[in-house]
Length: 292
Image (cartoon, rainbow, N blue to C red; front, side):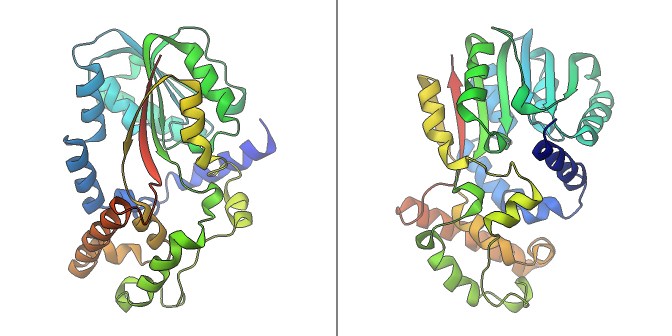
């Protein structure tokens, strides 16, 4: 395992079990989930994917790369469509939790957990019907290599599903994307933001690398490499750019636990939609479904 992968392992061994982690992510807020479900026309992203691509199919083989706690993959296995699913991740602590959850829901006999350096992954030839990257493709160091391996590993008609951040590498947002958010932040209710941060701030590239050297390493290249690798790629843009930019300096507990916080997030999401639909902000998040 490389030094960078070791640091990544240590980071996610802790991060996956940090009770505050999910609240820092804009997409975990109930209002954001509700908007996504309206966009997809389904009660969850797993239900959307299963009903559109897997309904009626059985005996499938799947592989998740960079699964973390593997919630999405476990739900897919629970659908009854899969005979086997491989779970790859760099964090042994996360994979132990996957095993515990698989036992709990009765699918332990259908999964295999492999703790490995993702950069050195070998998937074989025409071994799988589905490859999943759930918020993990933007951590890949060599996008052409890993996507090429996935294409080779898929059976004819097999699919790759990526739920991804495709914004600027290392979260180094251009000024034109943050200008309005910075002005907006100054007017945010004092009970909803970090008062020790009077201005909206973002991490430097060095700070991102120090925490996790793989974080958003080539995120902005995902769309181009995806289309260069697969001829058939469906894209579902999932919004979130303005919300993601703004969430860095907010008091996340207040956004969940106070009525004003919940109303505030709903308003932020409305602004987010308007800014993206009007072309004033690009999409930073998208689903990709590529078919071999």
